[in-house]
Amino acid sequence: MNFDALFTDQIDQLKADGNYRYFAELERKCGKFPRAANHVEGEKRDVTVWCSNDYLGMGQNPLTIAAMCEAVQRTGTGAGGTRNISGTNHDHLLLERELADLHGKEAALLFTSGYVSNWAALSCLGSRLENCVILSDSGNHASMIEGIRHSKAKKVIWKHNDVADLEAKLRALPANVPKIVAFESVYSMDGDICPMREIVEVAEKYGAMTYLDEVHAVGLYGPRGGGISEREGLADRITLIEGTLGKAYGVVGGYITGSAPLCDFIRSFASGFIFTTALPPAVAAAARASIMHLKTSNDERTRHQAQVAKLRAGLDRAGIPHMMNESHIVPVMIKDPVKTRMLADYLMQEWDIYVQPINYPTVPKGTERLRFTPSPLHTDADIDHLVAALSHLWKQCAVSHAVA
Picture 1 (cartoon, rainbow, N blue to C red):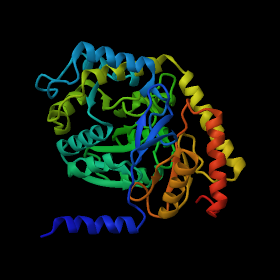
Picture 2 (picture 1 turned 180 degrees about the vertical axis):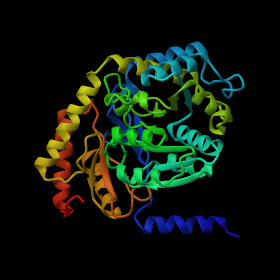
Picture 3 (picture 1 turned 90 degrees about the vertical axis):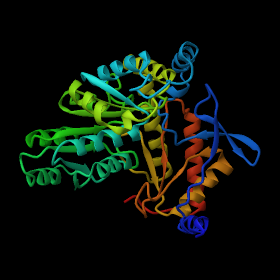
């Protein structure tokens, strides 16, 4: 059997549908964020990155860099093993204590990525709690969906951010079965924020555990960067808070926080924690430095929100429709995969602006978009340049529909 032919057929169909992903070959420039070099056919030119999830530029902050360099010189480049076998380093434990403090929890547990932390924690909880039912928001991330699927627990999907639907589904379940309500604070594609207080109150009413993904909020919201749960004063009422070190904190890795028994349970039974090499200590040291800084500094968050507001205002003046939300994520809807790709290519080739097209399966077909993530390091001139480019292309390409 010609397996390569089978692979090629499906790739060709993906290209025909306009959903094939082309990657920009970027070279980030230390201290120059959001500038990067784009490599194309042996040549490179400077572009401005508008779709990074290094939301605050902490990946190039001198404090983060210094902490990582110091730790590399002190410990070397690798962890030396899984956490169970020689890989638990002092820097890991210091970071876990920092994360527990960030969310006001007893304990925390590190994973190699935010995807893995969701997959491992949800699959462990769902499989080890007998007769467990996981109630998942319909907009949840792929990592949560995969974790729930892998657990083989009963799954009940509730309408996105619809507390009444959640309550109806909780009410229909037997009182004596373990129930987990899984949801996110900031949803990454539409940028909307959940009605967290109402979700927590309904979950408490029916004795359900709450599982909150804060990956697009940690570092960015709350007086110390603890996320929407900190901002709303709800962290102490949420059973498990999951987050990432790879977005606002500018490094890599994921984590969960909760009670000491909960974290020990997942540490002891989650295969995604047990059977993988630990994060390098230098990564943990850099993440800890980033978290400690953002616990006490609001300057980055203040400037971040200011630049988000300026971009939205500029798009409004230019008549460019964008999805309104309360977060830092600015989706400009195109609703056609081919046209979305074309606009992204024009922005890169003619305006030195890099934004990645977002298409199926990341978002449903017919909701393709350009997703902009302003940072505190995007200047007013950067924003003006982007708005001018979009305004020109909007007219040139006859994109004139309204946002649904």
